[in-house]
Image (cartoon, rainbow, N blue to C red; front, side, top):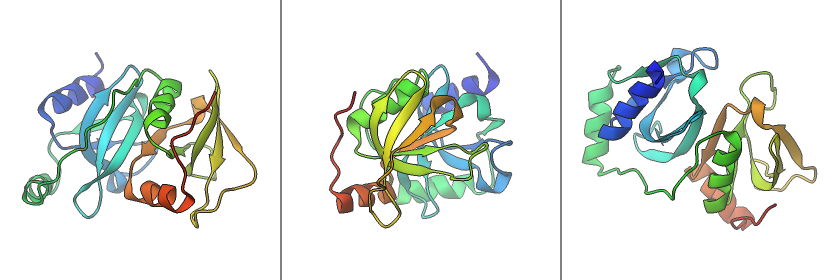
Length: 188
């Protein structure tokens, strides 16, 4: 078991708040903070804490991109106390297959209407939000939605190997889903 995987397993078992650093994708100031809720062969699923110190959706991250899993970090005790004072709890999730990008996306799209896909390496587009239309062994075809809740006419094909983060169930995605009236998709 790799060091990040062992640290994630300990944090998941104790539902501990951790800070995940992905050194080549972001600097230390933008590291993600949350509670690991699932660990697969290639991906970890994090209940993401936002700037308002509450849980706001989930991010699946490639384990190979993690450079550090921090159990102790600046302001951690304050965050834990604030989450407890607010009675913030991690939402219950359906069973997720985190084996690889394909299975992770399939698990998300089976239970949530929109998925956030990020390609932080080599893509000027950044994150895109959409509904899965088709999922193959090598790519995903998305019907994407704009920040103003308008569907783009052109569909977007993304190579699974390029995906670094898969997000879902955040307040922003839920708002987009409500405005666009999108439902959980049936896809092939």
